[in-house]
Amino acid sequence: MSDLQRIIWLASFPKSGNTWIRSLLAHYFMPPGQVPDLNNLRDFTTGDVRSDFFDAAAGGKYTGTTVEDWLKVRPKALRLIAASKPTHHFVKTHCQTMRVGEYDLIPPDVTAAAIYIMRNPFDLAPSFARHQATDMDTAIDRMMNPDSMAGTAQGIFEPLGRWDDHLNSWTRAPGLPIYTLRYEDMLANTGKAMRGLIEKFFRVPVDKPKLARAVKATNFDAMKKFEETHGFAEKPSEMKAFFAKGQAGVWREDLTPAQVARLREAFLPTLEQWYPEMLKETAEVAARV
Figure 1 (cartoon, rainbow, N blue to C red):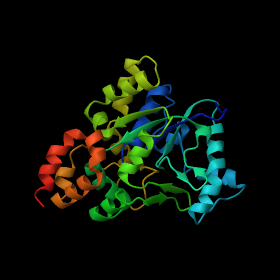
Figure 2: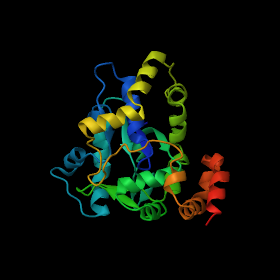
Figure 3: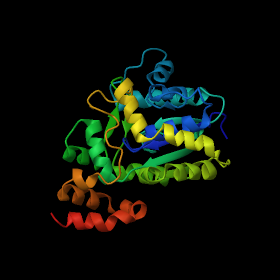
Figure 4: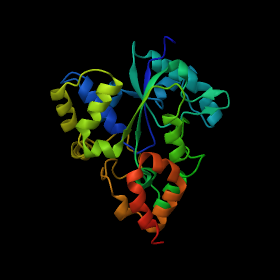
């Protein structure tokens, strides 16, 4: 085992609950009074698009223009991230687990484990469209594009790919200790979802009062109110609000039958595995085209 195998990845396709799980974990594991607010989550977790780590890895101000520029610096930046804390710690990522040329985007030598948060593509599409500041059909196109890419102004990239490829790249990664969470299950019973994570993944007894406080502090209304009062530093400038609805089932009002049909056809095998309860209703809606 490498001395730097310290990163527990918090991985997801954008708008799938990554901010929520980071806040939940912070409220559960950190002492009362020391829990960072939404604008200071980096005090508890970090992310693989942190420009300061890329600056340090580049030996000066990092500004990349191509994926190749980014790939040359990313391995060292990740080693610096892994070494930034003395033991296991959480790092957010939206990247797939894939190999690009000679580079592993999620290198085994800095990886301890992963938590993967997924969200069904029908509810994800409207949220992703707002996140991308685009129309619904364009957002769906990007969710179906194997070359879909996000990133920062400094040239730090995030290869997203297709929604199903993203999910499968993580959940089928060979040799990777991983725990999967569905956003919908977290909404339905946050306490139960977190108990499973704490007991089965971290393998420690649940502190029920701590968990209850964490769940209450991080419900959607609380996060939405925080953003309205203080803003949210991670919100893309094009978005009106990062925390918009936070519900399951919004696809019924937000998507047309044609859009439901497109998503269903594109992602059917993955839906059959992870969202079998949605197959019948989405088929009925898609048939209206």
